Length: 301
Image 1 (cartoon, rainbow, N blue to C red):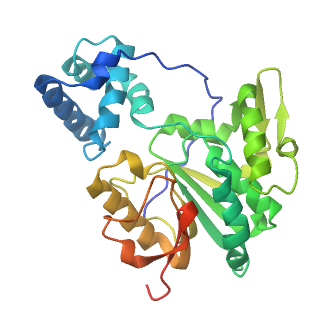
Image 2: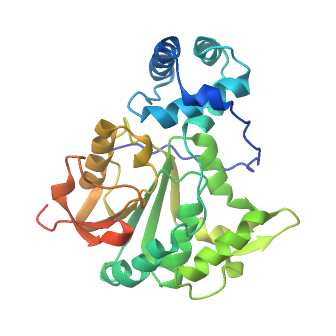
Image 3: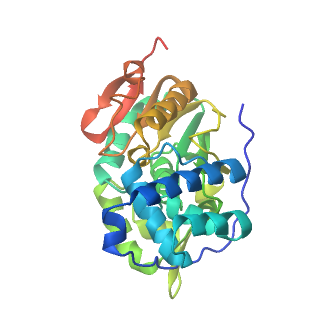
């Protein structure tokens, strides 16, 4: 069983990313390709973060952004910085892990959870929900609000995991800039909301702080889908827009973890551009709400 590593909350920072030269992202020389492989190997051997199986086009773009941010002339120079400057690691992880989300993103997914999945979940006396790759917490709070509105919150434990410690601290803080709330509110309403999103946060002059009680039943923990083991049985796993950044072998490993973690007839939610095909585990699931990429583990497994 995986030993969870709880994370202490800190107030998040809202910094904008640096721009990237288009030419840097459009092509890589053979030297760049070699240097990137050596950099990824060093990251794995020195810090045990394994990005070697991630899809190369998006990974290369993000490494180019990081190289420009650090002012490095080459990926070898970035590798040297990573190995000798401890403060470089969290910044680099911020570039390599994708933290782009919103509350109730793809409202149809959450509406399908309400209408199709929740009736089945209500038959259980207790529930465990795993939000894998939770980033800064938008998906977690969306599910916590949905479960409160559907009167499932008190019987549910949420596990919010991510590889990025700084993102987990932001998730536990539950603070989001005011300019994002209009979209959050629209998405919430379109998801079939049973109230107003404003009931769940307190707005300040620049940011909104979401109600701490929404995370009172949440365990925040570092977890790496590439290398870590299953740590709990779950009735619902929501891992959306994470697998698209993995190469095919890593997609198979992650879905294998989900298959092992899910209870019989448990539910798996993926992003709208993700699929179980070619993962080696598609036979373990049946489509439940195909249009929203919601699957159900077969009962005999």
